[in-house]
Image (cartoon, rainbow, N blue to C red):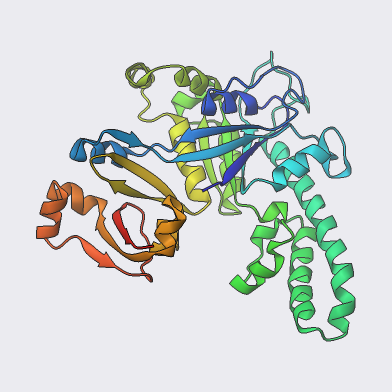
Length: 365
């Protein structure tokens, strides 16, 4: 599924260093604003221990993980919504992503000059969030002008849209993101076409020094967590420089390095999974002697739609799905044993796929 999370942040917060670590793509990283001008896109594997377990169980010819996409977006400054700096590029690029990953500087380093001259994570967050709010306000107000006349004429669809737009405008005027407004599924459909920036789900990444990473954070991280809690957002604490070093190691070296640091899991693995979850994504598996493979789907999708992710013919000619939960298959030891225990189910077109389902689709075209 072609979904992407955009990495944003003020200049010199460690954004491109983090992107380098995520993708090992070597995007240029330097101590000056706008080093990354055009967005870089990187594809990463979604870490999932279940895939390795299934591989050990089935012993296929190959194993294929599922992937996730990150986009590194040019640094932003105050006034972006009015075209300052690379504001117009920033806003156009962020409109194209499905979720926002905001990197926040939570470390002191006299060799890396912060754009505002001081380390203040909340100010950093608000600079970006306010620029997005200002851009959304302009979008909403323009749309209101078009809709108001029709609403006054009692056009049913226009009246419904007008009501939603007024709700959004009131929130934006209070400097609250559009996602903070409680909307019904129907209301969400009405405003979907506006592509509001602050409607996108957000994840905060607190970039700390290696010392503070080992300490579990610092006072700046506490500030970010308090801020994020107010909008029910998650915070991941990482050291981008450490992650960049880890990314260059093979699996054995990586494991030894993490043990030496006393860290159970790389921050990037946490970050990738959190981003995956942020978009409401989940994983199902196909497992046979030819290959064991992970597939990404949106939570709530039904079996035929999930079959269509593999191939459109699978959805078009869907008959049924043979499904076993990952835990049940592992406990049984193999598919035949799972069937004997009654753990393998036959599901039809209305079955809603679950994370961890191991499935074989039956179809006919």
